[in-house]
Length: 333
Image 1 (cartoon, rainbow, N blue to C red):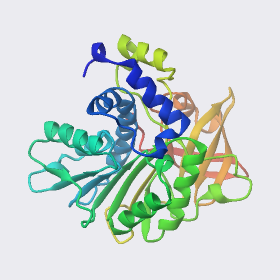
Image 2 (image 1 turned 60 degrees about the vertical axis):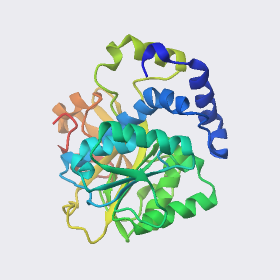
Image 3 (image 1 turned 90 degrees about the vertical axis):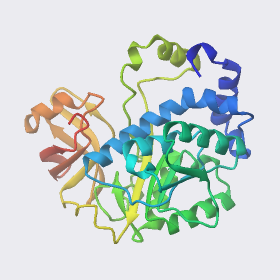
């Protein structure tokens, strides 16, 4: 697939289905060509979200458990390929990699791409009698009916770790929070949560907020005339890649270091003013709007509006004002 081969009637039909919600009414892939067009364009943008989350995990020193890796609801398989690029050992000879989707077209396309890029891995369709060690889930929540949710829950309950990315909309992010609450303390939250307590967004007064973050587009995208024209034609702001995510591991795993009591996470984007920044912060005390005076962190304030600015911190705050703050796990490091 290349830019000259794009068929906009295919892309328009797929996007209309995603936006209208009709994609939730059954398999929407009509051919391998549908998947190739999606994977080259919309799927690549989802891949940038995966790159962002996987980059944060690797910077934290987190490694997934080895065993059978399953991409549940694989679509074109872009999420699984990103995971295997981040941790190539998961694709070593003898390691099992499986895909499942309700569409046979999707299963076949995902396996074809997987075998092209990782020819030595044991890649095959998923046998429903087996359970995954690492479960990969991408953009499925708004397409699941109740039986589908039950099937997904069974797979999660049997997995050792889960990496899950969804759109950054308030409705889907809210659903993901509900899944988090059900799955703790059987699992511990690795990302994006800075604590293991009840999600602060469930507290009264936070109804208008939702847990979303922003990924960084691929390098050179804005200098690539093909991507610029694609964004204009598709009506997409290439600068904005909102997502919600949940990374879980079994509570008895020891790979994750204990979280600090003063660890905090920025939700969404800060609002910058000349003397201060206002941000939605998440930590063990809850989710609340915080003010960061410029005098308390002048260098950090200069970085807040950059795409790769840090979003994870250790901090102290008093009555809504951040008194001390230190960036950790910067995306620029």
